[in-house]
Image (cartoon, rainbow, N blue to C red; front, side, top):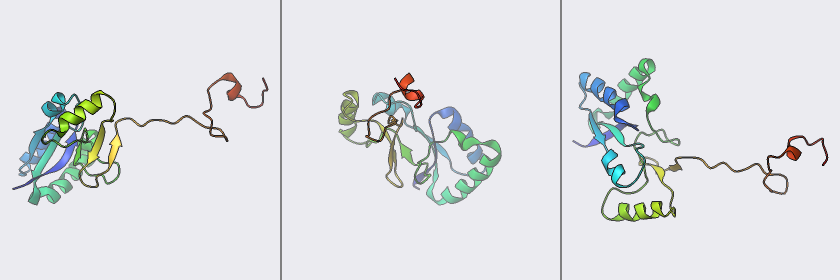
Length: 156
């Protein structure tokens, strides 16, 4: 039977209680850990631990997990897509097959490509950190934080 991702976590400590509780409830839950793969690809250990159940148990396990989360707040540490809410995400956004991860690792190291999260459900990618644009004036010039710009009533 094919396994489907029910929840994704950054570390094993948050995922293991979820797996244990699902197994106690009779689900065929398992832990899929990608931290070794990420370590070899010089990536941060983000979205690396996945709680998976069999495909035919997915809907009932998801409903049960949401009921438990209302009281125990297990999913507070879960990683999910900001667009569709799916837990089936990867970091970094590269395939896990053949030579492509090595090529991407080189591009990451040279800072020619940015590591991003990737959602398998809606194919959305998003960065680890959001770059903030500086405030701009009417002529689209960046506003500098200086004493002259703090109080517009004063003239230099």
